[in-house]
Amino acid sequence: MRAIVIYATCEGQTERIAKRIAKVMTDQGVPTDTFDVTRRHVHELAVDSYDAVVLGSSLHYAEHDPRIAWCIRENRRLLRELPTAFFSVSLGIISEHYKDRVEAEWLAESFLRDEDFVPSRHACFAGALRYSKYGWLKKHLMQWIAEKAGNKTNTDCDYEFTDWNAVEAFAEEFANFVHRCRKETRPGLKPIEVRKPYRECVVRSTECSATSPGCTCDPESPTGESEECSGDSATCDGKCCQTLASE
Image (cartoon, rainbow, N blue to C red):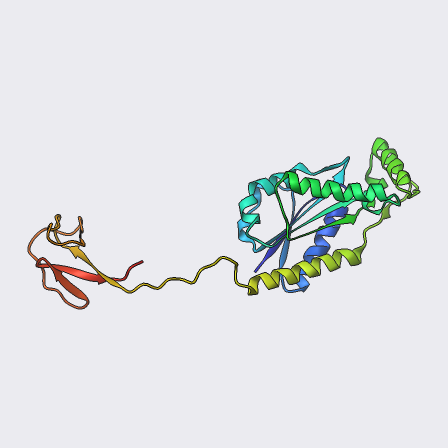
């Protein structure tokens, strides 16, 4: 059993969250890899090699990363059969304004609806302000957004708002869910029907007798007279045939 966290990060906070989730899941008995779609080509992904998938994206300018959307679309059928989780990272989720918090959650849910993706678990986490990694324009824009949300900040410092206890609780609960899925019987599976063996003739001739229903020809066998039958073989119009179990 193995899982993977596929994520898209800009300044690195989503990556930190993804790696913390992977570590907690590994500690809970679900070995978990990480894959950053911003550094590696998404075509390198082999999602079908995993038993559980977590997807995560930062939310910038009301949009989630399109590469995560691509991963969902390309693997939609498989994702519907596996335990899955999704997390969104933004600053809006910690705004002092109720409207901003609702909008952050709505944007995450809207993204999932647009991609026709219903994960087993999903969550929204607060990100960080990495002023040291921003250009001049983005630095002042992010400062304005932070102040609008009620967080006065100094552009000379970096700020982290992630609730790590919430991240670890999310990862631990999902790991437990994956374990439960492994133990439970998949719904809708029917017991395997066991049928009794039947006799099927493999005739050593290129033609079967019309009087021998059920006989089948073996084109690769040489023509000629019947051979002596032995073991589980029987005769069919004087030809030698074998008893085969149905498949």
